[in-house]
Length: 375
Image (cartoon, one colour):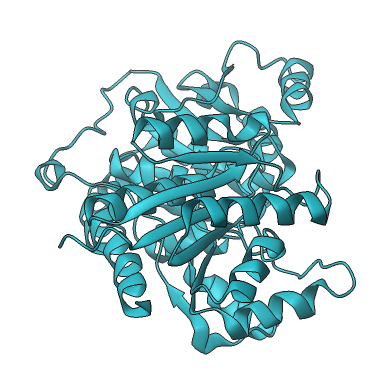
């Protein structure tokens, strides 16, 4: 369906680093353009948003870089940036992508002020609210006045309504998504030859939440026999990089643990691995890295936290381990090295599950249909 050329949607985010929020925004932008909408974007002007800006620009989406992040810029700068973008692009709809419930408040409030239909997507919802005085009330008002709110994880609906007290009737589940090739459903690419050294991988931001230090501790507990059967690669970047590398050195694990920088094409980066490990302490959303690993048909070991548990269908598609349980994670890795077949068997069901629940074309259509309803 091709829409009237005056149907303009301004996508806004103040995220300052690569992750699930900007991936979701890109998916929405491309789906909107394919449906004939005039898509533009207002994003932060710091270096952490450079890749997002490049990807959108390359896809033909006009991008404005401006001071948006509340942690760096005052309200006057944020307000001017938003008003300038609105005056320039003249949107009929504004869709904001939040890194947390307290992010991008100013652009959302301005949309309400201007009478522009407001949609926003919650990508990361912590277990406990952390708001400065007065902020919770402002966000609650945004929920009340928004046209619709979407969230990428089912458990976030529980948190947002029961813990945060936001109106549940405004929250619509539209999960993080990925493109799945239906012709790959019968492909078995996770067979591990007898005697081959297993190549394990994890990927994510080097921050405490992701629990990569827990994985390193679990590796250190492996016995010599298990160590001879497996090595590990850690893909990512972030503030804890040196701390994690020091842990590996202090444990004497340099020979079996290596680090590589974050890869923009994670799917290609995972091509040569045999098992994916997600040791997060907690997840406030649905990790995109899990979807990529499942789409590759990789056996998966993950923490039993909301987003990971949801993506693994409650353990039907991978092995779930209690978060922060170093011994349990180590024993699960050891079990896999001794007999990978049970996890390989689970992994064979993952692509069909993704196609049924996390297909990007189906889920982005839900967003586009919400926009259509607003007009």
